[in-house]
Image (tube, rainbow, N blue to C red):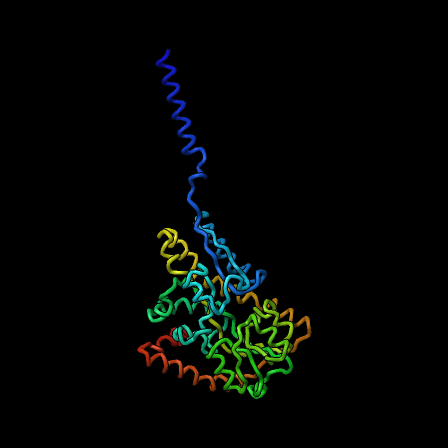
Length: 341
């Protein structure tokens, strides 16, 4: 009897130990990898709700909760113009950045910003990722980060406060906000004075008369409130598309298990470029409707005038090829890859 009760006692101890070990698995569950993502759009902007938040959710689902990403919209974590270096320094784990803000640092990437290359954000975004995958020279530009994906804007149009733009002559003497050196040169050729101001500051500059206009896709106009103060818009100038990169701190990336890295790569890359390209193209209609409802004026550039612009801009293409080729970079081949010619 004593032997039997001793056996029962040991069984009880074993059961208790098993319950302690497995009955409350959550106590021993692996802590999720938490990442901070910085981006410049407002919390309600389409690219936040249908781009960054969608991507973050896909990562969480694909990793079965092992990775959780917090999206900091509206440049609340770091300013967009400082986001690349902030990511390198570990201020944020992941960030959106505009390479054109420092074109000298990213000369190959700047090919995406050359005049009149792309009909849509989707096409431009796909080409940017193709370029990165095919040319090691471009990968070297981002050696201090992990590139997750690239995406691009729809083609830029001209938006002004006081006058319609039908020709290059209409731009003469106007102060117009630019993104980087590439579009600054385009505006100079057309007679405007380029002013380098980050997009979040454009609204106040337009309102105070510091700027007469901006170049921008239609999509971000409401989000940055520039749609409220501009009244005249071109619809087919299609000046250029602007490149964005989404990059990750290299030390943080290297700390992530390989199987998780593989999942992040699969959800990012070409897949994310397509997601964001489609999302950016989708932003155009809503902003256009807003401008139409407030009675804005829309102008179509005549075909012969556009041909004049294209001819004048050819020198920008040639200059870019010459500059990068002088550094031993196959400029003509890169441009041909991007343009499909």
